Length: 252
Image 1 (cartoon, one colour):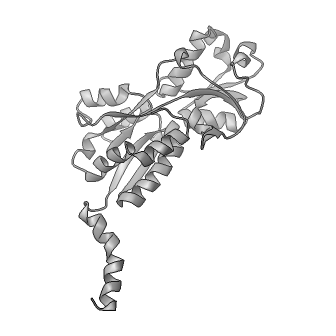
Image 2 (cartoon, rainbow, N blue to C red; image 1 turned 180 degrees about the horizontal axis):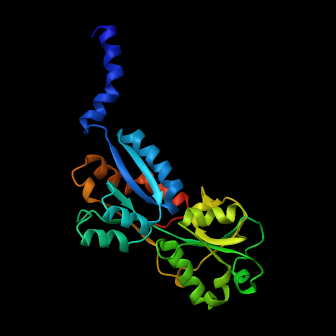
Image 3 (spheres, rainbow, N blue to C red; image 1 turned 90 degrees about the vertical axis):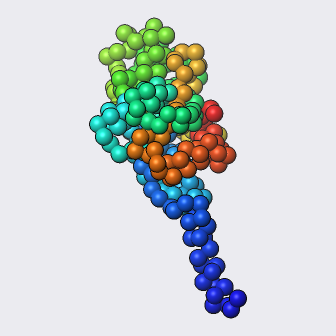
């Protein structure tokens, strides 16, 4: 093969490889807010490895449910619970047989101030704070889990006047990070990276104090015949995604 032809072939080979496995495409993904950081990393690796691009939207699972039922063209949902994907499947808005658990979430009580939150959560009983941040328990599973904890501890009524409610777990985190709340219930993934805390102080909530945070993914009706949607679902179950998910403190 002449040198010029070899050069052209070398330049085209990556494109031919992608085409051989199916044309590169975009997939629209609704992602629970707690999974923002890991999903951004996973999406970058997914595009590098497959050529497909994941267009990500982050928010509360309950709001995504309403949007999907009202015709939002999302093709894959990564929920913060297992109930919402099951419900969408039962209602015909998701593809049967595509639902799976991609992560087990972990709830923490966190303050941006070092030493403010003790490792047993006694700070809640002392009540020496003005604001306690949570995600909206009506639309965000992590907010519902936070209310479970307060009820189990017998503190729901005592602390009700101190609650500040974020639209989703990302906003609940921002209230604490900005100092508008001294502490709050957030996802471990928001304050944990590469196997260690990123700052502040925290209490990792014992699993028995709230309902399990099984986070399920499902291909939605709009993604039924989309190879990129299937490719993303497969990628989320692969070793690269698993390593990223674990590095943010999730269980698998």
